[in-house]
Image 1 (cartoon, rainbow, N blue to C red):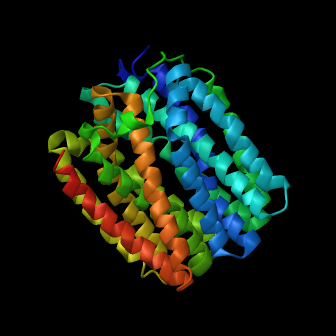
Image 2: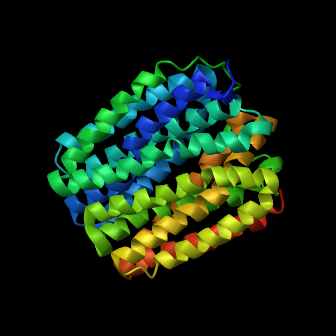
Amino acid sequence: MEKLGIIEGTLSSQFGDLVAYEFFKNLALSALGIFIPIIILDASGSLAIAGLYLLVKSLTSLGASVVVMNYLAGHGFEKGLYLSYLFLIPSILLLRFLDYSLGLVLAVAVLYSVGKTLHAEAKRLEFTENTTDGDRNKRSADITSIPNLGRFLGPLIAGSLSALFGFNALLTFAIAMIGLSLIPLSKLEKSAAKSQIKVKEIFKQEYRNFIPILTARGIQGIGAVALYGLFTYEFISGSFGSGFVRSLDTIGFVLVAYFSAWITDKISRKKVIAIGSTAASITYAARAFVTTPFQGFLVAFIGGIAFKLYHIPIFSQLADEAESTSETEFFALSRVCTSLGMILATGIFIFMLGVGDRIAFQTIFLIAALATLTIPMMESRL
């Protein structure tokens, strides 16, 4: 199979198809990741119900991790990408055409989570299989920054559509973008089958130092994206502002991605990760004290820059580790630990709602800051 990367000065066709697929899929998923909890909050009037959606989504991700990885190992990453549509599209249609109920919330959480897990893990297997250790920092920047243009446009368009025409217009847009992503997906080559895994195999001694890092990423992810989107919607600037916050976050991603790849090749990964994660932890803590739209937007923009600074070297490092051990085992471990982090953060959020809505958000932002600070400490042990 053709390697992902630069071939005679141009992007390989396989890589170009993957990037195009990611662009259109990210247009939809970036909008849905922010706005499904907001849609549920708007319909139910309850932050606890929106939190329950996030909790069930995280629990489903945990339960599906080994099953999804074994399916991808046996059938190939491209079949996993196709299968993701059979879960993602029904989850959107349920929100689009049915009235709100608790059963609907739970069904959407399960369907969307399985579809998102298939999408994310298939992409990671494809990336690892078709890059090499020597070019992985640069390719990490490619696969995380070029499609991030979709992540920039998705929330911005979604926020505008929901503010002007309501949430159903947003959901229709998401379905259309997912449909468009089928075109480049159809051009991807078939991958070889890999070995199946068992649950006990993913907790090997050699992986133990990665567990806190991966768990911290789960806490950081749920706090910085879904819960911060809910926070800005509820307390700061409504649906357009929530979309704009995520778009500003993504601008930071794009601006710094290639710089992060370049500087990681010049100095050690550990130093770049230490600088980026420390800066990111400050921006996560700052979210707890946001009171105006300008503050919310500024923190999101700076946070995106700091996050991507440490995410690029970590992304490529995880791919290196997976390639040197077992791709399916290591990525299953990654999904399990990330899901555990999201479950922990969401559970604390729901519990703290009993104390106060704003306090619940502030607690998670501060926990996300502390979790992110553990990343360079654990990184030093690898």
